[in-house]
Length: 201
Image 1 (tube, rainbow, N blue to C red):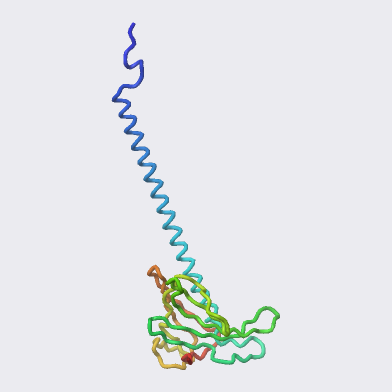
Image 2: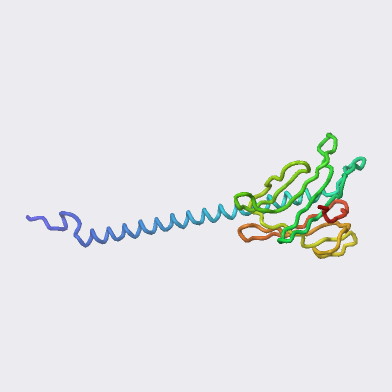
């Protein structure tokens, strides 16, 4: 008996159908892989941005929040104002802060820092930190704006950013801006009232 085409293997039609199904499966798998890679990239970018926002916020909240602190024991000499503001013409302000930092049983140490925002030599935006007597150092990248938006006075009055100084304040409100377009409102409270003054050149 002569063998039929069915017993010899797949027909041409069945071969074409199998190839088509295989192609659809490969395209679907590739699409899923591309989407997963995109989602992973977006997720990493969001986490990176969140990390920068938190880092800049905590850095400023810590140092500015200690403005005017003279120690828990006998009050020390800050040799200058606790918090000085330099209003910027380009939408970013600068802050000079002085406080006594206490660490365990060590002698309190005077910290005099200045924070401002500017571009580096490559054109990238940074939040800069400068210790008194030292060179300016980039503290957090991708910060392109630091602005005072309000002052909470000792009597509880909410003053605007352009209020005349000096002012005895219990808190200040800042606006932080980032290079990817996000902004963050940051409230910095002081444990004891601080006199905010204009920074002298």
